[in-house]
Amino acid sequence: GKSTFLRMLAGLDEISAGTITIRPGAEQGRPLNSVVFQEYAIFPWKTVIENVAFGLQMRGIVRRQRLETARFWLDRVGLGKFADYYPDQISGGMKQRVSIVRALANDPEVLLMDEPLGALDAQTRVVLQDELLRIWEETRKTVVYITHSLDEAVLLGDRVVLMSAQPGRNLAVFDIDIERPRTIAAMNTPRFTELRAAIWEKLGREVTRAMEMQQ
Image 1 (cartoon, rainbow, N blue to C red):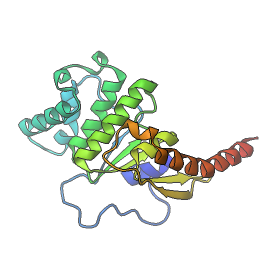
Image 2 (spheres, rainbow, N blue to C red):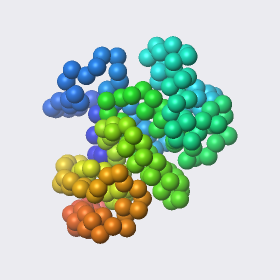
Image 3 (cartoon, rainbow, N blue to C red):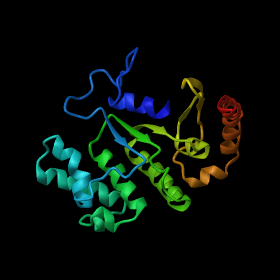
């Protein structure tokens, strides 16, 4: 249900009822959304900078401007010196950073992220969570972020929406009032622990129900 909802937001799946409105009167020529998937959705035959510039190329942005924009974003996430590398020459964490800045380079109204850190090892995941917090602080971009990790949801989000097991429905909404700017250190605060416990109380019952349905 979570990924289906995100795909509907992205316009990749048709909705069967109702409407989805991102922002009426949005700027023409500017993408409504960009998507970052769990898989490294970058082209192996293109260099890092060419991958980041690809969306701009598809929008008809002239070469000089799109390469300047791509390099600007690569520098912001510490990948500037890897601009001319190919994907098979960089690590998994770097590949996902390329996917993230490629989406940001398009300056979308909404950034859609479908478990973007799910395939990474624990240490790399923590590093990129901190990176995402920093990037958000700089851009203040609206982000819809799908995750199975309760810790990640509380750390990154301003609002956590729980979805039920089949059928996937809105189960509960929690406002996250942990002060920003945030870092990974927020996970050690009493408020983080309180919020996590409150959400797990609701989520735990749903997990038990889902397991019983499978028996």
